[in-house]
Image 1: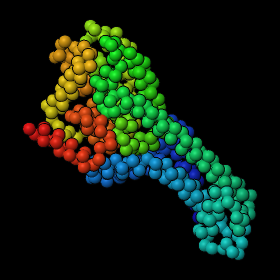
Image 2 (image 1 turned 30 degrees about the vertical axis):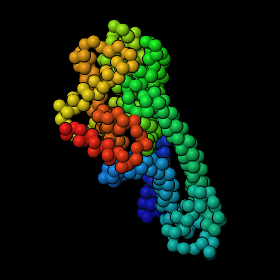
Image 3 (image 1 turned 180 degrees about the vertical axis):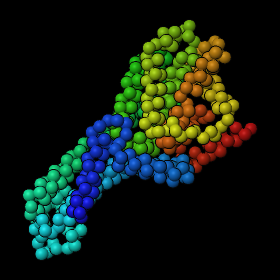
Amino acid sequence: MKPIFFTILGVGLLLLVVYDVYATILHARARSGPIGERLNRGLWRLARALAFKLSRARRHKVLNVVGPLLLPSLIVVYILTLLLGFALIYYPRMPSHFVVLQTAVAHPWIEAFYFSGITLTTLGYGDIAPLTLVMRMVALVEAASGLALISLSITYLITVYSALEHKRAVALSFYHQAEEGANVAGFIAHHFVGGKFYGLEAVLRQAARDIQALLESHVEHPVIHYFHPLEVYKSLPRVMFLELETCAVIRSCLDRDEYRELCDHPEVRTLEASAFHVLHDLVESLDLERRARRRVETHFEEARRWEQRFQQTMQRLSESGIKTSPDRDTAWEHYRRRREDWEAQLHRFSHYLGYDWDEITGDRDLLYAADEAMEEPRAEEATRRRGDTETR
């Protein structure tokens, strides 16, 4: 009874690792396997609980460490689980089914773990060797498992970091065009020269492709969610905000008679639909819909914040020589409805990833979202000044 129990338990652990490697590394389905998913979410929630008790700058530093630690941690868990699984198979057959040199004699548990370790890592010192054909086959399978796991782990690391590099490149392209911040009016004005728009449709077309590619990266490798860049402008929530806000401004704030081709351009509609679809899928994959957003402002305060952003955008567009909608009330209503469509989901997504809403959007102060290198004392001073202004 004892050999059967330990063998079943060991085989169960091995099958768990095999399934987790398949679900995490080989199969793209927006979620890792049971081991990877629990490890990723558990460590992330623990880090967030600690980080949100700190200042903004320190919070980002703490969360920035989590992603790079998750990958080696998962590999270590895989190795330890495999080692334990095979050791459970060897244990009830140790030492009767093995040749154990006198210098290696110890408790059967120690011998089983030791032999499992040197076999998995293909060291094979020879002081313990399988005697029966069955144990030889099991040892052969374990050695092959170790080699396969190492190869898959290296491939997985390379793929994840390639996806992260592409993600940073996409974010940087928006960062420089949006005046190194979250200034959507500046982003649109960047492509307005001599009374005409140049290249904006091509930029929006590429943005739609990039956001779909980023979604696929997150679907194939969910661990990417937990790589938290220190620079907010490199984050996915900032990229998504710029895309959705850009579409909202183009379709609501510009003079439709003057820029009808741009306002009705298929690339604008495609980007808006793509960004909204990606946001919905990301929120759903992280189970954020079940998390009720804790409101920190009333509906009136929210509408006032949106209207302030709307007025700032209209003013900046006019200053750049871009004709805005002559019917301000209608333009505001269209803008408000579009913000309502996606802000709650994006707010939830941003907060889960460890970002403050103001630093993602700059709704209350564009300089706050633009000054990514702001030192902690200056950040606290900026926050205090905004509070004083709102009080007055």
